[in-house]
Length: 517
Image (cartoon, rainbow, N blue to C red; front, top):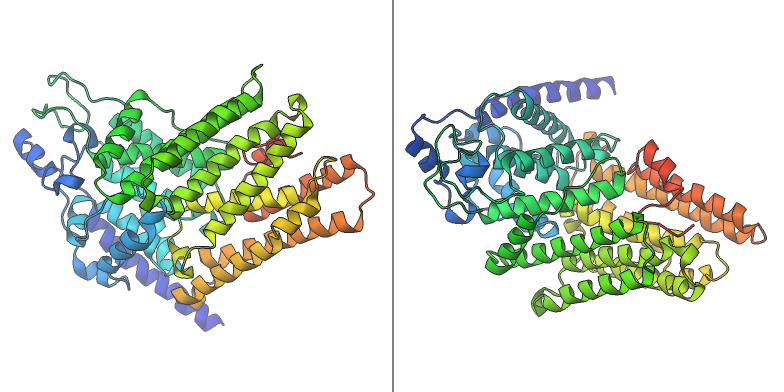
């Protein structure tokens, strides 16, 4: 055992040396000071992925990453890029990437490093790459005096780590999520991606190194996708953790969304555009939930559901069955139906009952849709955002299965959706994905293995809550409701998706469960 531990430590030390060589080759170098040269270099990428030099700060050249350094890390950069493009992007398509790994090394080195990290099967390597990513991001955000250090490449890399890094599982803490989110929002604001480009060509924009652009001020699709992705991810993280404010929607972001929907560079652009629209509706529901208003909740529900139906009707038939679109729709509809429940003091019993049934049916449909994923191999590509959609549905079903309310029949819930069967099937799928991935013995603490442990803990809590209600049917409503609260809190804490501060506020309701107690 001691020998195996020494071998592991030696291997990680060797890996650190290789990573130092790799990261040093990724460090940016300033381009010549000539204004024309800077702009020409920044436009050297393919048109579909080019960035506006007036906003992105991509005015310096980056040397190609030596192939020998990448090969020594036990995985092929070409294979990593292919896995990311074909198996992961479908779960959050905010990027349109070329298949050319060499172009990625030269033009998007930080993003390329982040892609290698999130696709890497070796957990020690993944953790080491994650540490390097943090150091590079810190240096470029806070230590570098280079005006081009904070650029679109940095933003895209941060969003990639947020979406697929599963930092909360690898490090057993959720605090990395708000920190990466805040960094991404800061980059968006510094690059002014949430605002229109200045019309005056005499205005010097940050990142140009003192050179004014002679081009007409326009946003690229790459920039537009990035700012929209930051909005969606920040909305999800703020809902989960409640200790960070999501990025505010602007009129310019609406223009970005319209441009993306109109140009549709790829079929997934349409899915992504609708996903953003649905998250905007979910945010509206959240604003209504926390606002003090005399308008009946049912009125808001009708108006918001109409918007969701408009999104459903506008999507092309071939994409209507897309798993991401359907998951985004169910997530938003759960947010809407929760409005009636959050205003239960002012809502008639019949409307509350309709809201509860709507939540149950929506959650059931969401879970059915998830299990239609054809291969457990796809579990590896699921983004944090997509998994959050799934987690919301599971926890809603758990709550409805143990809820103590005179108008609600928990037996009906259990006959409609068996939450224990759902968790068993999910655990089995994660275990199959882990076996298919071929994780090494030393990677037993990888995110798939930790996901299995968390789900098993979640199942134990759900089983205890269900058994408690069966064995003590005569308990008072208040006592049963209090115990149900603690059971759900135990589930959430076991999955480590919320911090202590949110645990306290949860008793007053959250966007996921508001009104259930």
